Image (cartoon, helix red, strand yellow):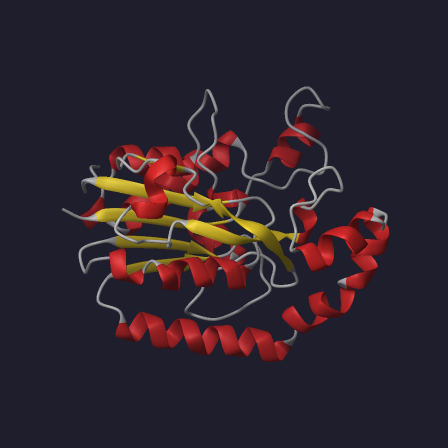
Length: 246
């Protein structure tokens, strides 16, 4: 039986909401035997791609993979110790036994997004932990600005496009790659404009806040609203009916 793999940032978070988000909805309707959600806030695309590549040995030809491409300017920082990576799954994988679980380290994350770093949790590589702890958050931001520019350069974008094209042509399983922004225009990545055109709208928590004069939603939060979660889940289910119970 096939597995559903969802790998990304906060837009692929399983969450714990009273109203099911799109990840929960597609997981519920997936025809296969299991699902694995790997997501963390502020995660950069290189880490998302790395996690995907490290898990190739566990992905079969009948599986379905969903990857998100966040803003490419994000910067990752090396952790002092690796972190458990699976946010949610129906597989019986215990954190306490993962070190001996068939010698598989593919379910760990070695980095943290720079926007998720806080001085209160200085779990960086020891060569960075002390100097970063002595800096204010805005000073850390200044230190990584050059890397942000490099990551968001046209060269980086073209490089990722070619890598993803090669992977999609070579790999035997279905993979859907999408983005919640419009930084990349390529037929290999379905971006925000394309999704909005196919669904008919794009709606965020910030839109909810504006529409209700602050009664619902959050100012400045551009994650999916309940309306958008439902629409995006239906969009995926209709686009890939071979994987879902309609």
